[in-house]
Amino acid sequence: DRLESEQIRRARAAYCGLVTFMDEQIGRVLETLGGARFAADTAVAYISDHGEMAGEHGLWWKSNLYEGSARVPALFSWPDRFAPGRRVAAVTSLLDLAPTLIDLAGGPPLPHAAGASLRAMLETGVAPAGWRDSAMAENVTTGRGERPSRMVRRGPWKLNHYHGHETPQLFNLEED
Image 1 (cartoon, rainbow, N blue to C red):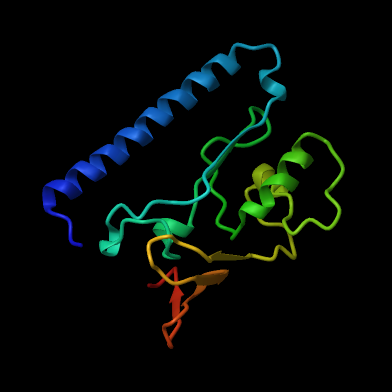
Image 2: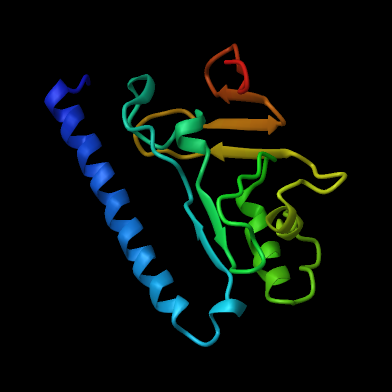
């Protein structure tokens, strides 16, 4: 079903309103934290479990593997430890979240963890030598009649496979 232009405008406005509201609430938390005695010893992480297509390529749902849906925000803040505004280009995964938070808290690494701590990247802005620079994702059940799909990303390369389609999609995200 194609959406009318007014429906698209309203949907995008609602999404932008939700993002603005969330930003304001996070700002309130950070402002309150800033006045606390333990502010300098507190790391803050904001992570989402998926992006939002918001009509890009005519798609609205999160159950695809294009960048608008599969790429998620991951924001970390820790005064005097992480430089403000730093952006890390390395490929990471939500599997890295638990090892990172445990490392930041000074705990021992998780045994057999699939992810790795992002601490070195957060502190220096550079991926450590040997960083895997890859991620995988899958949508197995979608509930809207869409077929399962899988994605592999390594560096700038991304391969999407939607089951039921013979040809996978290969992208160079720096060029495509």
